[in-house]
View 1 (tube, one colour):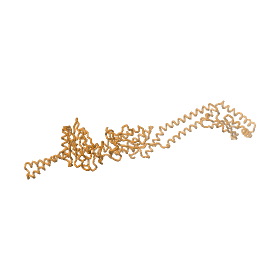
View 2 (spheres, rainbow, N blue to C red):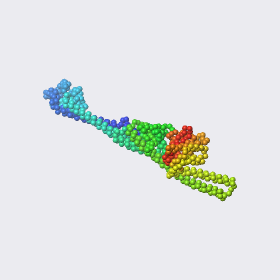
View 3 (cartoon, helix red, strand yellow):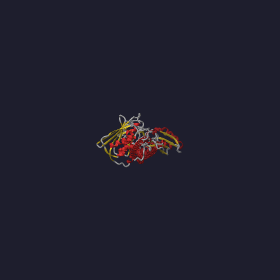
View 4 (cartoon, helix red, strand yellow):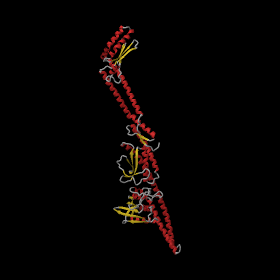
Amino acid sequence: MSPHRQTRWSSQPKAPILRLVSVLAVLLIDISFLMALDTLFVSQKRALIHDSMEEFNELANIVEPLRKELAYIRQTNRPDNYMEKAKQYLDANAATFLAGEHPWYQLILTDDSNTIQAVYTNQQKLALFNNAKNCLFSRTFHAPVRNYSTKITLFYATPQGWPEIEAMVRRYWLYAILFVTLTWLGYWWLYRTLFMPLQRVGSAIETMIRADSIAMIPNPKHAIEEAFNQLARNQREVLLGLSIDHIVDALHDQPDDLAILEEYLRHVVEPIQKMYPFAELQAYRALGANNQYRLLSPNGPSTGQGIRTLSATDPHLLFLCVGGREYGALRWTPLHPMTPREEQMIAQEISKQTENGLARALTRSRALTEERNRFGINLATNMGHDLTNIIATGKWDLNTIKRALDLGLVSMEETKGKFFKEAVEGLKSNLHFLQEMVNIYRAFGYARSPRYEEIDLTELIHDISRLFLQSTSKKIQIQFEPAASLSITAEPRLLRMALFNLLGNAAQAMQRQDPPIREGLICIRLMGESGLVTLTVSDNGPGIRSPQGVLLQAPDINQIFQSGFTTKDSHSGGGLGLAWVKSIVEEFHHGTIHASNLTEGGACITIHL
């Protein structure tokens, strides 16, 4: 299954078969019970009627005249003539007899072989006497009373006005209501606690199989649903972690923390939005001031647009922090309404995975940066040592030539000798300058073991300015406006390297201006007050711009101090080490450094020590 899966919130089918079958089962149970209950009621009602001797005798007395008349007919007629006489009598009198207010409603005449010879029925009487007061469900109650001597069978319906029967009807109705109520309550309980959770889990599993996605049960109400959702959440966390691992692995060649942060936040949006029920997901990079964040474009680097002020009270907002530092934020629009608990659980899952991934990406980047720095320090130190030896050898050779000339060991014409001596002095001066340049880059070695001492900062700036002008072929003028002599405790070699890099960056920026500046101007100002030293380096170049030529504004402008950041295009090579300048100022001298673009044009770097 693909690591980029979408989380779906499963819904129940429109006509769930499980619910239909369960409802039919309960209906069948209720109907079967009610039929059995009605059968039992009829049996007990018949027994009650037969056991009520006085009332039953009254019924028998109503039949007695009819029975006596038929008995007389049987006694006074031959057996073969009895049926005919009995039928004649009943044809004339049965309707009158059955029309009375008694419950007798049917009369059947049979012969000696029990073959029915005549049937007389008052059907309306059956429906009239079997009513809601004395019957439970069926309205067809009837019971026979057979007289073998006269060969007649009389059927009676439910007698009227029997309190015992009416009380039994109420009691049986109570039984029916209680049973039906209990069965439906039991069904509702089973459905809520077993059938519905199983149905929702089955629907979610079906969604996962059909859509190849992680399905969740919305608003789980049972432990079964909670357990399923927990399994789905665990799977979702694992898959999100795998996706973030791929993103982190792809960022191993990014040059600095800022690039890693932006690329990470930009790429993490897609897997999160696929795995969680978000209609929209936006990534923001923290700008580090006044709760401001920049909205990151999903398709490219961030620009000067899209600055937002995010509120911590927004329930759909997640801030990403690593090591106590806030790096960015994610803001989502839910695909459907969610409870605060659901949103909190989702935020915890995303926070755990994204912050761990960001921490790994930044740790790897910093480890690589430190490794590159160690390599650069070792290379600068070793090369500086080797170059110093070469320069020392050159100085020794030039001193030997000069002494030979002074001692007359080498003779030449006066004019040629004069030019030769000037050339030797020029070479000695160049070697001295070369040694000073080598000393600047050998200062990398003091990053491992700095040696602080009391220095005259004004003199140091004068010295490094003179050295820089000697090192460049560009037409550049340096104006230095010093305060009175300022003495501070610092690591002079690292400060010299930092200032040299600032001057070099300013010179390169002015060289890239279109049209080129005929003569660049770098202004250095030094002020000291109340134990605070402020050093500014400004130029008349094009200002600090992005590689695309866009003039950078606060707070984007200070990203130039990030490791590996460059304002040049991809064909111009790397920068001169502004990340090192920031490190020298802040880590080795506990100062601050920030950049700005001047309103009149040009860039300005301000250092507070």
